Image 1 (tube, rainbow, N blue to C red):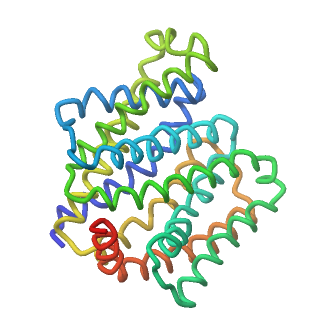
Image 2 (tube, helix red, strand yellow; image 1 turned 180 degrees about the vertical axis):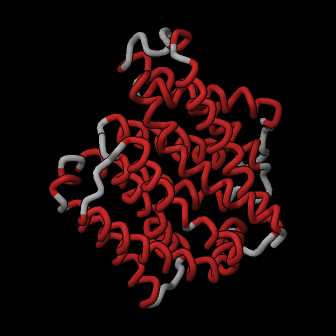
Length: 298
């Protein structure tokens, strides 16, 4: 891999890790629904020139946009709005990997052996260990919402596979176009005055919202898609493993979250499981992609 591209992968990891600060600051300042509406509003302005009708695939595009956009981010933002120890959420969010694998088994007929089954078990065991820590137990609502958001992320990741050949900025443009009205109406109903007060938000809050929209949503996802077009999945995917650990470390430092034994042990066990799943699944990626192509042709 070219050194510049390696640095780009690490930059994406850092952007995704820093996003936990961006979202937490935004939801605390505006409310979860208002924050995510503003985020997608910025993303829509950036991607508007790239939005194109996709003949024969718009039903899939709109479904993906709704689930991977509005629904997924709704649970993410609400979880952060009810949680103080956001480091716990960074660890809980790792269950997206085992959820993706489970869905691939159910809907793609993928077969998994004991190695990845062990990875799935470890990932969930780590969350359970963390959950029984007294300091984390009080954050159980936020952790639970994060697990639900990870499930929708997993659904979205499988749907994105079926949109191969569609420009990534077009996909994210539709994602924003669908999410803004849905979340905007929800904000008006459940957070009255939130959007109206947006112009008065401090510049620092707008900066974090902009960071989420551009660096996390667009640079991160679009950049990763570009990298996967130029390098094997087995090269790229393992390089994203530092993201949850960076995210948890940043949360501990920035928000002064307590580091408990339950959090540490749970994080280690869960990360070990996710690492097993990620590394083994990367090797299986060509087979999974082929399964999607066969399914799409039916």
